[in-house]
Image 1 (tube, rainbow, N blue to C red):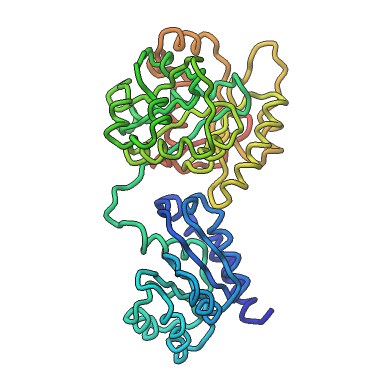
Image 2 (cartoon, rainbow, N blue to C red):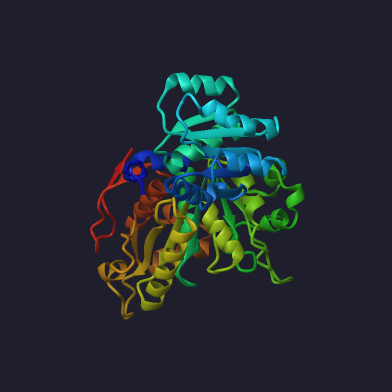
Length: 423
């Protein structure tokens, strides 16, 4: 390894640790394009590997080759060029354009080219842009730099911003993940006067319609089984109004058929939800299938709800490990401990529960059978049943956290909730 490669690695490692990684949270998913990267350094190969594993690249066909501009020219002399070519070039500024000439001779006119070079020269940059190069970046580049360059080329800058998607899932059945999801969706819509859609993804056993005292004739089943019809207009016909700013995409909660789905079955639904409302809350059933993995890897925020026992601890640990691999460039999922302090039930203390998970809970919700039972039986939310209760305040704070409207301070384990600083 050369001294130059070592310097690039060191500087790039520092760059990846900077707050620029937060820019990915606001980046739109890239469209269905083909990209071929030719890398001369190990560093750029690692950067491109990270890009390939990012959820915003799920529709992109990315190929990574170790090779130079000559290798690219030889390859594309006999095969069509992709939508985008990323080239790493070590040539000096005077020889760079000459080195690109063989590739230009075989490159389709519609193909975009991004150069990763080693010379910070504004004159060179201007010359490359004049000659049809889409972008020139100087090593060391970070993953955010590469993805931002691709987004600048292929994402419409005038497109409407995408809404934020938050998925709630239980570490085990019966831990109250659906109840928490429904109360948080209601809280988000009321607290911020933000149009919010709650989607119940548990088609056979979903309870969102019961919790909101609704009986819609249509809902998410029509959306999943007719993806070719699904757009914002069709979705609007399937929604049920629960409050001024909250709409429900209800589950049929019937057993008239088997609900088996392929891995990408819910992706069209998620795409339309993000285009239709500033916030979408997804109530994900306690399953580990291709489609639930796909949903959890695609959303902006994941919230795992767990009760303080050993089975929940094991499952939460497995889920956190799996989601960190599925979402390597996103922050870790949130954790909520629910049903804490149930009478006569042996429990694992919050500190002991969270230590092996290496994560602090954003909320610890106490067991209150009377409050939750009354709310469920009356088809109302906690903030409607008892707006002054500590649990109602907890749901308000969770709503702030999952929508990114707070800066979290260090959570003190064992307390009901960490201190929050609202924006």
